[in-house]
Length: 334
Ligand code: AHR
Image (cartoon, rainbow, N blue to C red):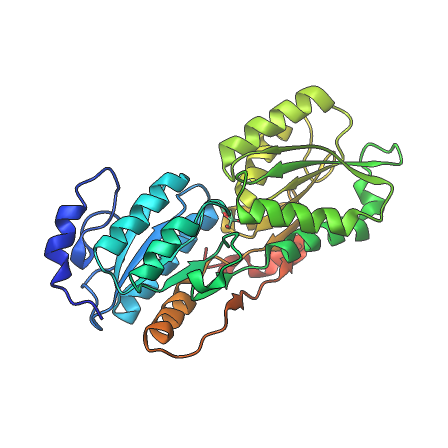
């Protein structure tokens, strides 16, 4: 394991544009706190702070690192791949024991992952996958099955198609708010949703545009969908709660009633989304669990101890109707 003596050197390397946390848990929002009681130093590059899900995920990772006695160096890439690559290179220079990251997009990682491999630093993927044929470039990948999430959203629509034709024309026109272009959840949820509705000739995706997984993005895209297709939209499939919540604002501002005039399906099940579901403004939420911190720390310790770990660890998740949201809302952790 790297010892605290690397900290002095890393402080010099840190003087770039990146907002990396200082050794021993100072600096930005590092959860490292006391500085790695077990001597393990982990560099973590987070996607950004684009959604409620992401905030819950960052908190989970920081809290779990503190609980495990791991010195966490945490950086926020602000949804930019170049920032993540810089952060990973900094962690390599710092000779951290392990690197974990949630890749903002799927492609373009092989050169920097090769560098980590040459430096003998194990890389753990969390939340999102990378697109590579060389699976020796990472030790394990912990996260959701995003294709399955999209499929669950589509299955609900198929099962509820009788009430989803809100415009009453015999067709169900769906508009889709996609996540960040090139990101694994955007690609996979779109695929799963399309697979699920493929055999239904009365259901069609009439418009699809990225809202970048943000509330503002969802609102803006929904406004433009309403401007060009008013009276023809039956359903919104928002690939996360935040975009769905932004879409609700646009729908209400247009004088329409979400849940009645336009059905809304989202993914994540963060508290704000669950509240809107309980209030009947959202119709169905597919859960995507952000509380990956404890499993991430556990996997990291195992990898560093040379224990066998599965190459893929899939997060367990469920779905929620309005009634189910009402019954779990009070105890929702995020
Ligand atoms: O990668 C997970 C996705 O990223 C979540 O669904 C979304 O809210 C986040 O921004």
